[in-house]
Length: 434
Ligand SMILES: Cc1cc2nc3c(=O)[nH]c(=O)nc-3n(C[C@H](O)[C@H](O)[C@H](O)COP(=O)(O)OP(=O)(O)OC[C@H]3O[C@@H](n4cnc5c(N)ncnc54)[C@H](O)[C@@H]3O)c2cc1C
Image (cartoon, rainbow, N blue to C red; front, side):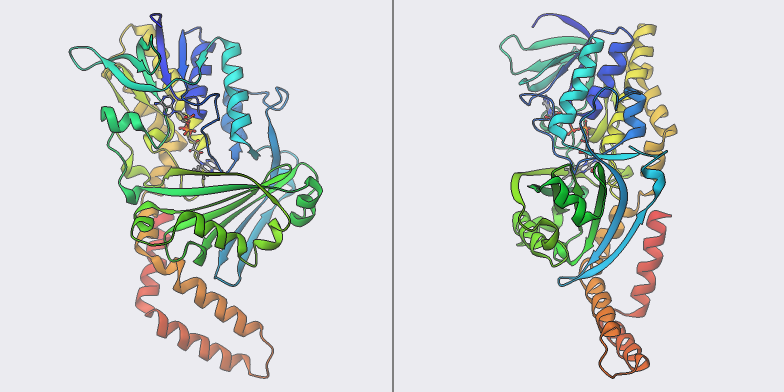
C-alpha cells in the first residue's frame, strides 16, 4: 500500500472514527486501520453511549438509523452484600421526552460498524483485518506513518492518530506511552444474556424502547476494588463485572467465577432467569484517571480515547470521552496541516483543547477516586455486610425494641470498624469526588 495519506488512524473505535469523520468532512485524506474483521468486532463495552457527543459528529443520528437498543430512562445504583442489598434509583420523564437519547444502549459490534460507515460516506478509507504493528519514524524520531501486517504494509502519513484503546500492543512495542500499572486498569468480563423484549420490559418496569442501567458496588467483587453493571438492550441484558487488575493478581478469585457468583446473587438471578447466554468477553478498562494520562502528542502523532487513559471510572463514561478527544484531535490536525507544520509544537493545541473540555475537567475533578477505592477495601467487604445486617435487623419484627436494636447495631459497627477509620473514609470519599 504505497499510497500517501495526510492522516493515518490506528483503531476504528469511537475515538478513531469520530476523528476520521471530522477529518473527512474537511476534505482531508484519511485512512483508518482496524485489526478486527469489521469495526466493533473486537470491541467490548457495557453498552451505554451518550447522545451529546455522538450528535457532535452525526447530528441526526436517530434519523440515520443509529442502531440504538434502548433509550435509558432510569438509572439505578445497588450496594450489595452477598445475600441482598440496597437500591437507589432515579427516573425522570425528561429522559423520555426532551432529554431522550441522552444515554442509550448499543451493541458495539453493530454501532461501530454503523459509525464507520458514516465516516466512509464522508470519504474516510477504513481498512479492516489489518493490524498496525509499528510506527514509522524519520532519522529525527518524528512519526511519519505506520507499518501494518499486510504484505504491502507501510503507509506514510503527515500525522498519525493513535486510537487503539487501553490494551495497546503498539504502546508496549513503540513506547509512545508507558504500559499501565496493574493498579491503573481493571479487568472486566461481560456476558450477554438473551431474553424476550416483553420479559425485559416487565422485569425492569419500562415501556418498549425504554431501558435501565444498574451500577453495582459491594461484596460482589469479593473484597476487591471493582464494579458490576447490568444494562438493558432490546432483547438481551449486558452483565459486566470487573476488578482492579492488581487486586485480581493478588487474589485467587478468577473473573469468570466472580461473574457466575454475580449471576446467582438473589437480586440478579430473578432478572436473568430463563435467559440464554449469547456472548462472553473480557477487556481492560483504564481506571487510573487523570494522573495516568500520558503525553498525548508528539512530533507527527497524537493519542486519543482510552489509549490516552481517558475514562471516567465513577460515571462509567469512556465512549463519549473517546469521541470528544477524537474530534479535538481532528481539529488540531486540520489546523496543523493548514499551517504546513505537523511537528510537536504545532500539535500542542490538542492538549490545550482537551484541558479546556469537559474531558480533562471531569478527570481532574475525580483524580483521587481510583486511589480512594484502592485504599478503602472495606467498601467491598465490611461496610456492605454491616449495612445489610443493620437493615435486616431493623426490618425484622421479633419483639425486640428498636432502641435495643440500634444499640446492638452501633456496637457491631464499632467492633468491626473504628469510628476514626469510618470518619477518615467518609472524608476521603467526599474529597475524591469533590
Ligand atoms: C466491560 C466494559 C464496559 C464498558 N462500559 C462502557 C459504557 O457503558 N459506556 C461507555 O461510555 N464506556 C464504556 N466502556 C469503555 C468504552 O468501551 C471505551 O472507553 C471506549 O470504547 C474507548 O474507545 P476508543 O476508541 O478509545 O477505544 P476502543 O473502543 O478500544 O477501540 C480501539 C480500536 O482499535 C483497534 N486496534 C487496537 N490495536 C490495533 C492495532 N494495532 N491495529 C489496528 N487496530 C487496532 C481495536 O480492535 C479497536 O477496534 C466499557 C469498557 C469495558 C471494557
